[in-house]
Image 1: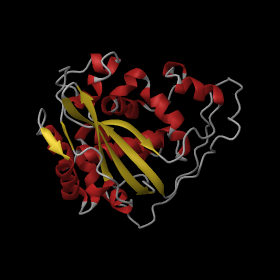
Image 2: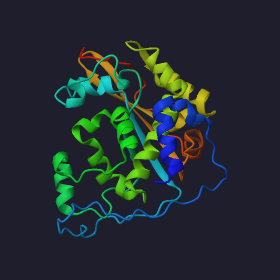
Image 3: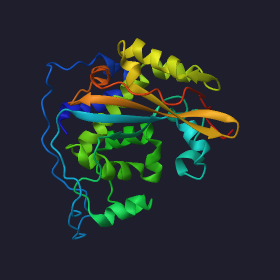
Length: 274
């Protein structure tokens, strides 16, 4: 990862997502990154890529989904997970969107069947570690609480291997996109309505206010039932383009096709088990 890209990650970690909203691509066609070099194989395993599996694609314009969780709602149904047991009101994910993943249309590119089987069995601690510099790792641990359950290993193996990015580029891009979301009126809407209900129309309007008219039509709500409550547990954002070194969330949203709103309304859950 370039020194310029590493510096951006550190600045996002220190000053929050608002910085990213000021970053604009310098040309209509962002430069392509070099193809990721390392396949997702366990070091020394001797495994070969799965026969017939998708192959790694070079970076460029593509459809991606940014999946951003509302962690308190997710944890209502996953109370035994380490990231949920340790959650508190002062932690970042109590009032900000958390990174679930950045998903291309393909999955498991150049990955051995052995690792695919481990991943699908949920044995993520046995997957190869993700190698990141200390600054990126610290930021990822904050914005992706699922790293306490090795979620990043699963996300890289299933999704990151199909983006044509290195591990550093894949998670760095994900962090910057999430920072833009957390610096937007959509995050303010959620943080200001904890314990109350929001409609899909309200959420989509907040995206329009932050990223331009029509941006909200690329956002889908996911809800989950918790007893008598319907909770918003995740937003999925449709993106189109090449994120480049300084991804512009608004431009990527507006370039994608509209999607259905998902669940019509749900409660913004508070931190802690209800």
